[in-house]
View 1 (cartoon, one colour):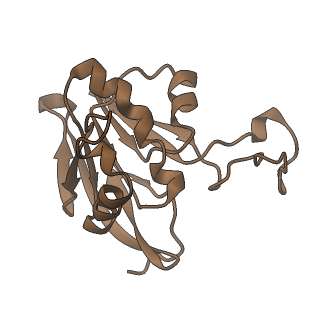
View 2: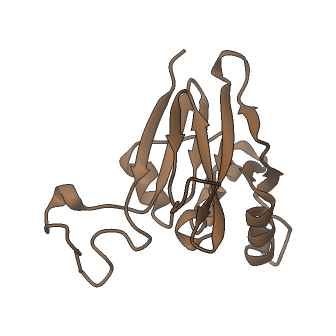
Length: 179
């Protein structure tokens, strides 16, 4: 069974154009519009979302994506994680927590800064189950399983994860591959 990778967004942390209408060096053309970074790997009914940009709702609707199996997070920055709250309909749909995977630093950050997603709080049921990634792991069942390797790299003053699968690497933010 073949896998498919859909790049949902590939823009900078503010997208193109920015909220103030600035296009940077891009020409003001529809083909240059960029939402923030997210991707999804689909193999049968196994749909693995990578990063949850603030644009995730628009990205899912534009690409007619109606399911996710699990979520991989590359790092703790807002442009990778602030779409997590948008995943609530998948919790409601399946009546179970969504598994998210990342390194321990990112998981700790998310649990501290978006507590309501992991523990019951006023008015919110927890929708996420946190998992620490290993260097090599798999997600999915039988012939829909995807084997993934995680690689820690530098992204400014923090670390970010690269996810490698099916001879493909997903790299959202990195400024040094030499780690």
